Image 1 (cartoon, rainbow, N blue to C red):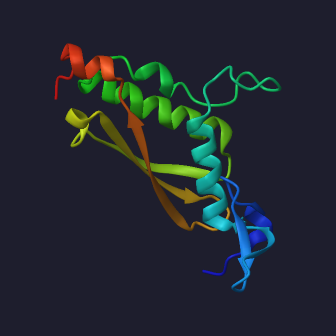
Image 2 (spheres, rainbow, N blue to C red):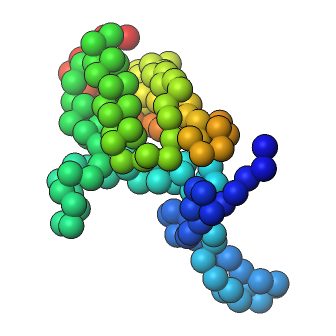
Length: 147
C-alpha cells in the first residue's frame, strides 16, 4: 500500500533528536518523522502526559499515573486497558485501536507492559507499540502484587 505522508502528517521526531553529517558530527537538522512513526510518537506523548500537567490544555494526556498504586489484579488490568483505549481514542484521531494486551509477566519486577495494536484510518496500515508502566516501589515492599 502506498504511503501518503500528507494524509498522516510529517514533523519532528519525538523526543527530539538531531542528525549529523560526516566524521565532524556537524549538526544538520532535527530528525524528521512521518507516517506510522509520527503517530506512534504522538501516542507515546499522550500516554506519557499526566492529565492536568499542561498549562494550555489541562485535559490532555492519560490517567495512567493514577493507576501505579493500585494492586494488580484482573480488575485493575481491565481498568488499565480502558484508560489506554480512552486516552488514545480521545487524542489520536488518526488511528483505530485493534487490540490492547496487558502483559503482567514482569509485574514482580515492577513493570507492566501494554502491547497496543492499531490501524491507521486513512491508509489501513497497521502499527503497534509497547508502553511500559512502572509500578511504585511501595507496592513491591508492601506485597500488594496479586499476580
